Length: 443
Image (cartoon, rainbow, N blue to C red; front, side, top):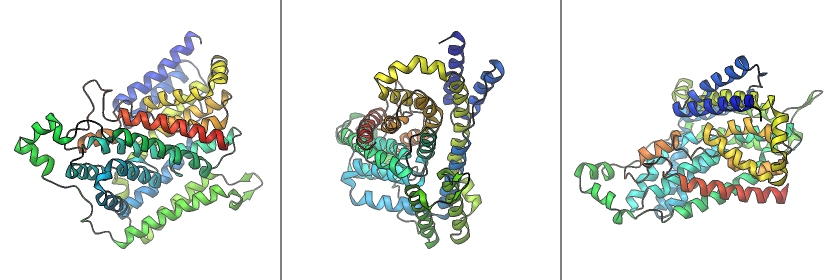
């Protein structure tokens, strides 16, 4: 590696670090500065913007945002709450399952903000330390991204893999990622089951209860969606959304159903966009979903932030790696041949920096294929693209800390000793090991 390569790599890493400090849109925007320095300062040829992934995110988020505007998301949250309140003693296991499957359905982890206060409320009323279910549920909301048929990370993995000779479909990816991630989450929930002191034995929590204001803050209110009246149009919107997901999965499983032209068969990235946009239109027409309300909602807004982040990050990363493919291959060939699974560590570390699983896949998967790593290996390490729990600056983690009225879910005095570290590590390590074993067996 030359001095110039090192300097340019430091520019890439520096842009990611500064962007992560500002968060939100800054991740993509500040990556633009890094891209400008590489192109105009060092004369590197610009890489390819990840337009296919961006279009898919826009279509999926628009559809999910419209469903939220119709009230459909409230119905899904209400169904989840009924299940949790029916079995409050199992909240540490049921909470992550609820957030996990909500993310699978909607394709983004930002749908769980309404459910998090409910999880905390149930735990408090049952006398369970809220940190136990809340932390693992926050982790689960992000783990679900690698298991959703409309998530950018999954679609990008399939499209990039197909382009590099590993023919795999979305259902085949999900057949590995879903059982692997479920194993990881249940391991994390089991590890969290007796985590920390019980509330009646926690001196810090008991000291809070002696203050009437604190006591009223902790126990004086209840978070619930059960008192909401769900209109029939909201339920219809959910049915339309689920039907759209089913259509996507069927067409991905049976590509022979897709139209064919002289130039080739219709690609799944186009299918997802057409189906999602059409479903959104049906919700607007038949479910009284307001586009203005959708644009103002958290699902659509967080999705657009993800678009900007992936746009800047992936373009900057592709510019660097595409210009030094041969050099990187020479440096890493021996390591990759001996320990191909080690690419999981690279995926994880990059995710710690850029807070986006889709961006990790778009930026790093082409490099992994160029190094000669087999597609089955990369499928096996797919769960390792989630590492941004490591530094607790992601919105869902911060929101979870704020939702926990007991104060047991914390960031920690030394930043890394936070509530999400243990369940995050247990989940990702277990999921990656199980996924690797499944991929080796089936592919």
